[in-house]
Each structure stands twice: as structure tokens, then as C-alpha cells.
Image (cartoon, rainbow, N blue to C red):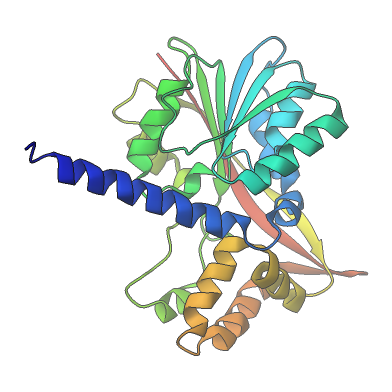
Length: 278
């Protein structure tokens, strides 16, 4: 008997379990609406890139905001996402936009079937990776050698989104969430790609303004529509702390909200990092 078989079976089982858990999180709520809040920030990953006649792989494509825009600009595009429900929305939106995009189910942990792309993008996607170095290697391997580009968008440190405020993290005890801002820090991103030929060639930060009726409405919408926030609050609800977490989140968002005639505008910082392969 091959004594490596049980370990292999276990690894396959673990991967399948993680994939199923990820699908459950992202199919919960209404992420199509949440993604539309910051779709312009997602599409900024394409700024300054000549797309006409190029090939693009959009990783963790969600409802296809980046993929569809790249196709509009003349690229041949493949969008990959782990959640069938989001891909169904993406296909419908591509049809309405009258563009052709190949949408396929898959994870950013295995891009082995996708190679040689001129541009590999991920907007607010790979920032969720539990093993960023591994995922960075997958992204770099998917880009063509000698001038292929990898471009990533992530929430900026110290901003409205990205990581729960420290007081909420404290409520989670020994199970803190993944820091979604790591991919927005050039030094961290460079470390993730250190074992590849991809090097940072551009980094820029910006903000997007998202309108809401009120600060309380921000928390209510996240709790009802955004799978990761729903999962986080469910964990705290089990310990009777979800109400406190909502109050803490409202206090957090208050610092980034500007009053308007119709309510508030939440100013959310993000960063775009572009790397080029040797």
C-alpha cells in the first residue's frame, strides 16, 4: 500500500471542503448588488492598459464587471470564479452588453488550465487568499512570459473596507479574519511574488464614493447582502455579540461618511498594483 495515499486523499478532501465553503459564502446574500457599489473601482484595474486584441484572464470575476469592460475594449476575455450563481449573473450581463466572454468555474488556487495571457486581473478577489504566496505564483504563471501583466485591486489599509475595526476583531477571539489590505501594500505584494519573475511596475491609490441613505443602512446592507460579512456576524451571533459588532461597525463607518442631501457618501480607499513578468 502506498502510504502517501491517505495524505493525498485528505488534501483533496480539504480542498473540496474549502471550495464548498467559499461557494456557500459568496452565494449567500446578494453580492451582485454589493459588487455594483464599487464596480468602477474594480474596472480601474484596466486603466492605462492597451486591451485591443489582447488576451485577458479575470480571476475571481464575480458578476463580470472587469471581464465585460475588457471585452468592450476589444480583448479576448476569460473570467474565472468559484461561485456558479455569480457566473450566471455575469453571463447574463455579458449578453445584455453584447460582448463575448468565456466564463468558467474555478478557483484562484488552481489556474493550471489558464496560461499565456497578456493580462491577468483580480479586483477585490485574490485579496481573500489564505495563502497569498501560492496564489501569486498561480497569477504569475497564468501571465505570458516576457511582458505579461498581472494587475490586482485590493482595499487600502486604514480605510472603510478591508478589515473589520480592531474592536470587532477582538470579539472574534482566536479566529481573526483575513487581512484584505495586504495586496494593497507594495512591500507585501512584492513578497508574495518573490518566487516569480513578476515585479511591480506601477502602484496607485484612489478612493471611491458610495452613496447610502445613512450609516446604519451601510451596516444593514452588508449584514443582509455581503456573504463574508454575513458569515462574520453569524459567528458573533452564536456568542450573542452580533448586536455589539453592528454598533462598532456603525462607529467605524461614521469616520468615513460624508453627509449629503440624500444621506451619506462612504469614502472607501483602494489600491491598484500592476506587475510585469520577465
